Length: 377
Ligand SMILES: Nc1ncnc2c1ncn2[C@@H]1O[C@H](COP(=O)(O)OP(=O)(O)OP(=O)(O)O)[C@@H](O)[C@H]1O
Ligand SMILES: [Mg+2]
Image 1: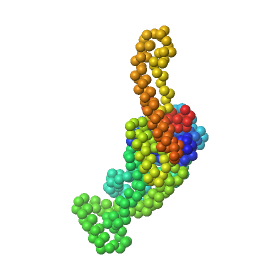
Image 2: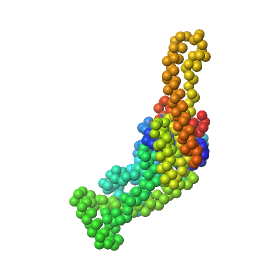
Image 3: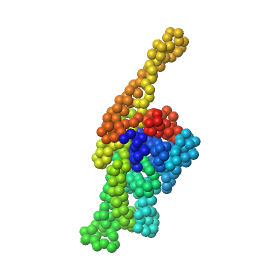
Image 4: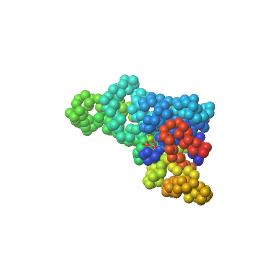
């Protein structure tokens, strides 16, 4: 499938790849492209550059996605047809977690109890993979709302970024019922002697280490959190089913450097391990689609001996620079060809996005990238 068709037809696109290759930028450009095709697009970004967040008008701790005003887009030279819209949201684990608690806590009192606990405040640091979990949770919640035609998910700069597919399982281990029952015994359930002993041992150890109020707080927190757990598990399955369906596409972003190909292949492998397929690659920040520069020597030859000496001399000096430029274009084209081959068996191959000299963190720059995605250039 061509990238343009992916943007036009899929319901979910996940952008992954090594750190700093341009996942966040590409995610925004893909969302803008979908809006230009008349779709309602939502981009879920992770830690966008401040300028990009400003350009998209995303507040740092917004509770809801914000829409980028069509008139603002029009003013920046981006025409969005009727029906098209661009929403953006910054994935902040704390905000998403709050939403989870609000939605799932059995009662307002439970929700309040969870939110008030010191532990909850520190939870962002406590549970590994929380960011991935919240990404999956947000994706699922928005998809269920069916308010958007396309949701684009940015991923964090980690080789384990796709762990979010496994994150619910890891969270599950953390909140394993046996662990929970040791830390926070359910008063309505009968406990075996061993468990009871373990439980009181843990309680004593905790209050000795952290003071009795912390131990109580922890138990109360885990007790309430445990009730959320079943519903989370249902969601985890929902996310996996959604991402395995043909409504979703995984795009691996790469940027030319020595490790680019092996990193891209690594991500393709991870995606495959998870039972998913890579729709294709994007080679970002590349010179692959540039026109090869004319050799200054050739130009000099065409100008002939009548050209002013300063010009001919200048052209001589440009030769090494042109050589570097040509080598770079050639190298990027070779990389692009290799990525195409990697992507061919499963999907669209690879698309090159140009290196933009100007700062890429604004709407006009995103539009240029979007032109390439929509194959308008
Ligand atoms: N096509 C491009 N041309 C020029 N600069 C670019 C291009 N794409 C991205 N950049 C710049 O490269 C930097 C990294 O981009 P971005 O934040 O999108 O990468 P990322 O993969 O999301 O990074 P991280 O892994 O840290 O989340 C940014 O400063 C961005 O402005
Ligand atoms: Mg990023």
